Amino acid sequence: MEHFAYIPFVPDKKTVMRRMGAYRAQFPKALDMDIDAFIKEAESAFHVRGRAQLVPLRHSKQGAMCIGDHDVVSEKLAKLLLASRSVYLMCASIQRRDVEKISAAMQRGEGLKALVFDAYASECVDGALGVIMARKNESLRRTGQKLTKHRFSAGYGDLDIRYQKLFFDML
Image 1 (tube, helix red, strand yellow):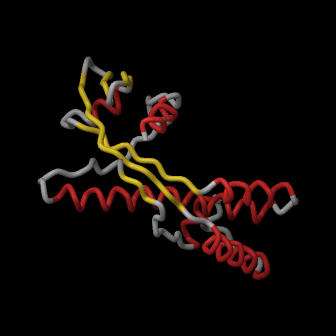
Image 2 (tube, one colour):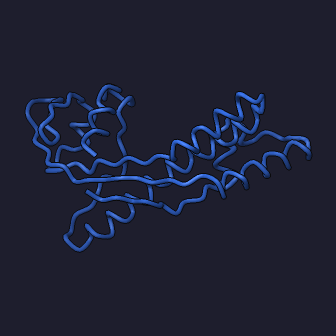
């Protein structure tokens, strides 16, 4: 099991704005300055941590596999992992106190701040998974192995969201 107590990833304004659905939007100067201030506040307040682990993989039948000791059904994931003998499970999250900052802003009626914080946190987590993958690929390179180019998350494609808790519990 690999533990990442701190993952250094700082999303830029462009990615935060894209996550907010406002990448190409033009805002009045005062609103743009507020967004910048909220991003700066999030940079100093939010911290991402994560875990990861290589888990044995056995293919059973078409669209089904055994990850660790657990049966998983997903034709798309099975196809992606067809040549693999293991799965690199990863998770990343902001801390509970950071999630509470987002909720508190919303409860105080600070919707824009909550939106910026939520988008910033989402980009931090997504970026942190990219950092974890890059580090793992560096260590695998010595053995001639590498991770697949694409990540596959529970709830996307045909991989049922119920597997998210299973994977999290495995970490």
